[in-house]
Image (cartoon, rainbow, N blue to C red; front, top):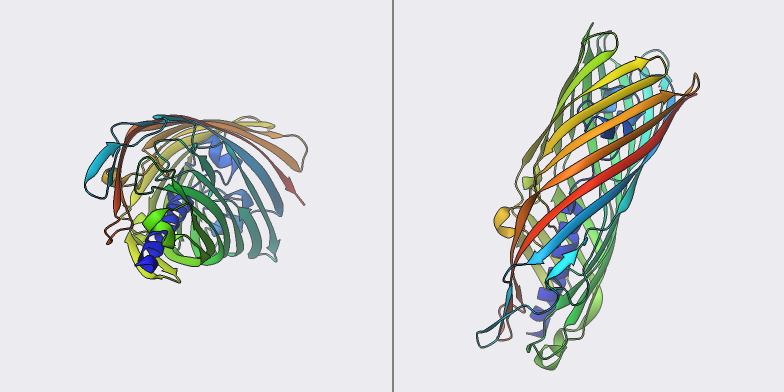
Length: 428
């Protein structure tokens, strides 16, 4: 029975890790300062290494160029208790104790991005990009009502994409990229003991791993129209880590553990299509749609010394849409703006405090200044309006044993965000 209890605890820790890594704040779009300035409405059709994340064909017809940028993500959020309960053995149900409001559990952060590309002969080009598609930190206090779902979480990812592209015809560019993504994460979650008079135990986990995928893309360029399409593969993850379970007392003491564990799960594929129309010599209109195959993240398979188990996630596919424009005010200054609707894949009936995400609108503006014949400076600002949402998440600790404890979290979530981004492009 002690092995089963240990498995349940380490499994819960891996669920928290995986959900945070691939859903919290979600997927970070801030892989290009130019893209941020128009709410990611024209990236699949734009040219240059700054668009490599969205379309590997973007470098086929562009000159040799280096891009570097950084986006500061500032989030103001509030997660409030709304009747959460905990049920101890024997059927005794009590309100979850602790502070009922958590202010700004989603921590501010920075998302760097870098890309380089160069032509090879008249028809080919090669490039590389380094991005941080998932890069997030959340923190709840030890006395928070949400502690049985989440305490501290830190996630860092780095995605290296190597790209080759070619001019297949005078109007058609093609590209292919191979991605290697490194993930490093650490988290902490509270575990209840068998009496409300006893202090909580603790779950701690750290893990890392390399994961691999690919991206395909094409662009068609005509007199005033440009079209783009790309497909980024789902990515199978195998995260190896260390699990620590401590502070459990009495009959649960045998579940305290310190050892290795791993988890397997799959993150979504992304299909992107878009169009650009040069309305005048100065004004270009853009539209882009992305479909995320979040249903790939349907389960997490857990492996520990205590045994294996599979935990359902039930994320849903989503479709994001954006429109925007670029306007060349003069030869040295280009202005841009855009708006995007970005729905959440988290199921309404199973939203957790660790991933308190919701549907959102992005409203963005940006500019590019040509400071020298070779150097351009980019800047952007984006306001994110999160729709109010609710938390509904039940957890069973030590399930299948007489010591089973059930928590039923109920909460309300509200928030808004601001992205400030700066970058530079230089030809060589």
